[in-house]
Image 1 (cartoon, rainbow, N blue to C red):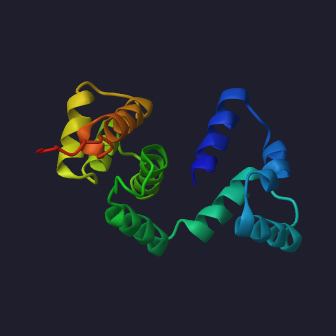
Image 2 (image 1 turned 30 degrees about the horizontal axis):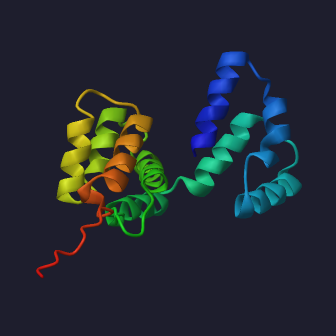
Length: 162
């Protein structure tokens, strides 16, 4: 769904004609979406971008899809041992914006940081006091998980009591 906002933005900013967008739509979609696109193109022929946009929304932006994205977000708790901060954060951001597209960046970051453990959440919020960019949040999260005791990467040598 994010690609549709990007297309609309390009259309508005540089005035791309509908024909150019619909002609290159096949290169923007992947996997099963690409098969769907070719089948629709074969059945309905060449159409304008507004028509394709309506078809994409009717196909993928339905309530059960939004519910699935929301459930995935709620279940996505950060695990220091198995998750990589950048990929986990961006995946959670995509899920959250899928069912709340108009949410502000600050609220998105706070909701995502709540999906971390208590110490990690506190450390991230403490490092990102002012409104930060997504990159700042990811950098803080990566630093905390790799360079601090919260990340668990510190080696404590055994005490020798001889």
